[in-house]
Image 1 (tube, rainbow, N blue to C red):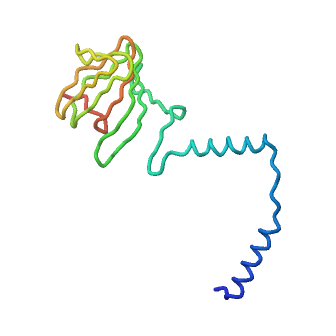
Image 2 (spheres, rainbow, N blue to C red; image 1 turned 60 degrees about the vertical axis):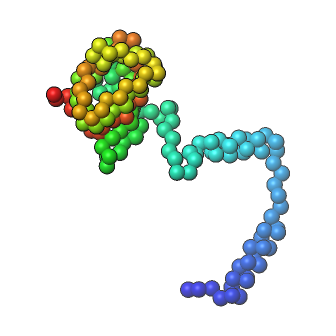
Image 3 (cartoon, rainbow, N blue to C red; image 1 turned 45 degrees about the horizontal axis):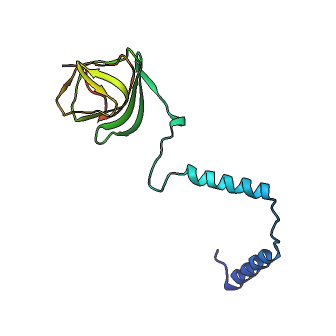
Length: 157
């Protein structure tokens, strides 16, 4: 049912009268400060429009092998790729494997070896599609940002 012009005018008059009758509340400085802090917190908590933020406090790490944990950051099942953090404690090992697509392996902290090839913090290792990786090992511990194929590479030669 639609409203008539008279009904709409009456509703507008009602709204105007109610708005005019409302008296501003006096807020104490403590309450005003709390409201301001909470508003700013809420504004900071929201990622910019069209983006997504993964907070470290919300991280879910999955143990995939003894001393090896993975935190998946992003997965693109259409493209068959993922981006993950890989954390290996001393003595951790990722078995040898072949890559079906290119892999980017960025050492963020610590050091590791791919076979006998040593990588340290700041090193970037790129493995093109079809290449073979010897086992990835660490004696000191390592944190790696990995972008590569999903599901994960095949351990079969």
